[in-house]
Length: 496
Length: 92
Ligand code: SF4
Ligand code: SF4
Image 1 (cartoon, each protein chain N blue to C red):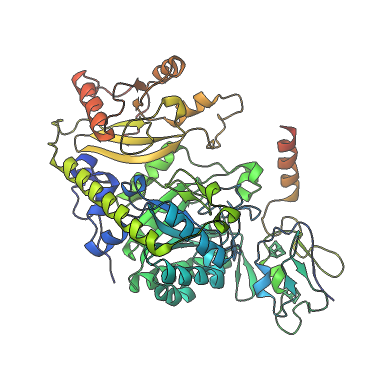
Image 2 (cartoon, helix red, strand yellow):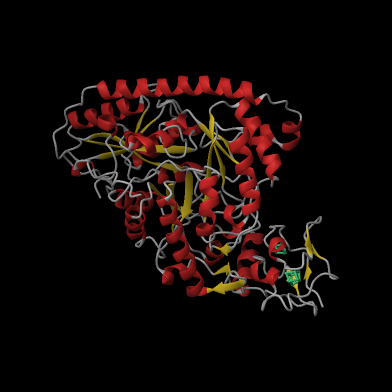
């Protein structure tokens, strides 16, 4: 089955994603998907920017073993390709995982998706992974299943995956070139041998591509993740994007490398830096011309529970689950009602947004990036100082579109200017590089001054307003004040 | 003749299913090899399977007590570089 080219019917001006007000942020990319795919993804919190405000996903850590080594991973911790490095998830047996999933589903009706992403490679643990999926398919048919893999064992797993009715598979594909692969994967375990260097990388690449093609042929949705590693594969990922799209992957998600010496990974110890927020966004832009990009991935950990960006895992430890009595038939009925309510809510909001008239901004007016502090519900509702991440929006004559998330102080991106002396506030401000305004519910004096010095206009006037409306309002103010005629003081990336 | 798993094992499970003689078992604080069952894969495979998939350098020893995967052989991190990075971290 060939999936259609998703962006083909968008006007060239909107290249790089959908204009949010005219067709509605990345979700609207979801709206443009063929019906059978849209149905599958519209309440998937990892795929739909809209849905992740309303629906929740969880991961269970049932798959400990791995069959390859990545230079960004240290097996003392969870797999870094889907998870945050430096954390260890509680390993569950398939039975425990099923119990946990059903306990969460009964408690958090918004939970729609169960994923197995580690802590190793799910398909390198086929018995544990498939036992979990089989039980869940049977006992909790209203939960969607998904799985992430490095791809090495994918071809031999496709048949079983299609039987277990798993409709979302994520493959981490960092390259299609064995030269580059050898700089990312030091070895693989293949046909009873450890194979190092380029030879191993070539086998892995071939298996990934073959697996991708086989999944698409079976009608199983495939998302591709790539880790952006500056100087290694950053120049190459646009080509990867093109290839995986042409083979039928429906989403491509570029994630930043996270490398710290204390993780003990090759890249961490060798001083390989991660991309700056700006570099990441530029690459996501470059790739999105070719395919749907997922911009809101937060790199959850392998046993994460909850809405993207929050984790309620501590409410569902094994002893707590053991004490729970679950009537899943009743839970399923309740879940159904909740889901229908949410979906009709989402429809309403979409319709309301679509009905709004488009503001008049002269064509050719330069686009502007703005950062927004929000806890969700599409509202500007967070204090600047409380924001652990900002959502970046772009305003342009085509409307408002969501661009990316930027974390503030969790990780430094590892470049040389990032020393210990740098305060959390300075780091936060640096993470906003390229933005001309930051919209939040409130902001203190100190950050206000520093932001102004950095050429970023703080704005607390739109508290509790809809994000897209507020971003457009600020854009129109800038237009009226003549600010859009001139280039901004600082290097401007919005139109790069 | 048998291989041995030592305390640097991170309990990742990778070795257990690949052992042809079921010599490996889950134990606390780390996985172990039953020396009576381990054949060092003689007669089954050219390379000992556990040591070919184990991601942790030094976690599996041969019968002479030497690391099957010596420092730097799997991660590619030169041992001096690792020592230097760890010293820098400790100094912080
Ligand atoms: S050397 Fe072979 S037989 Fe011995 S424990 Fe390892 S895998 Fe099993
Ligand atoms: S593969 Fe190595 S680290 Fe993993 S359980 Fe076996 S001995 Fe331990």
